[in-house]
Image 1 (cartoon, rainbow, N blue to C red):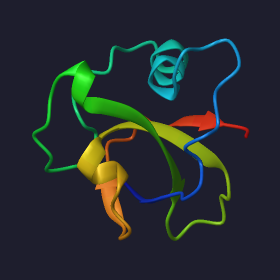
Image 2: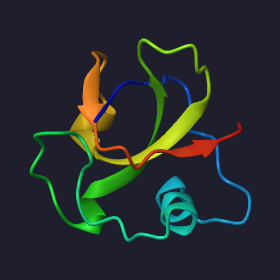
Image 3: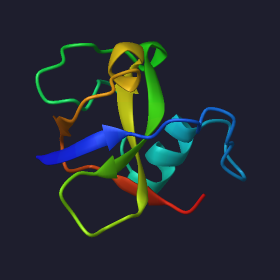
Image 4: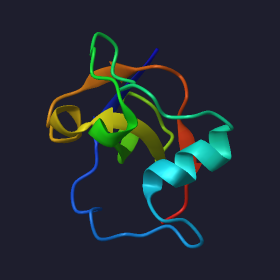
Length: 91
C-alpha cells in the first residue's frame, strides 16, 4: 500500500497518444482497470473509473502518478492508501 493525495487542476491534461489517463495507466501497467485502487473501496466496472493524478505522501518523491480511482475517490482532499500499481507520468 502507498499513501497518496489527489492533485488538483489536472482535469484538462490529456496524455499524448491515448484517449484518457485510464487508457494510459492500462498501457503502461499492462493491466486492465476493473476496480478502484483505493484500499477499502468496492467500486468496480471500468465505466465507473478515471485515471487519477496523485502524489505520494510523506516522500521526497515529487513525481506525479496515475492510478484508477472511482469518481468519489478522485474528489477526495484527504490522504488515503492505494495499491502499489502507480504509473509515473511527466506532465
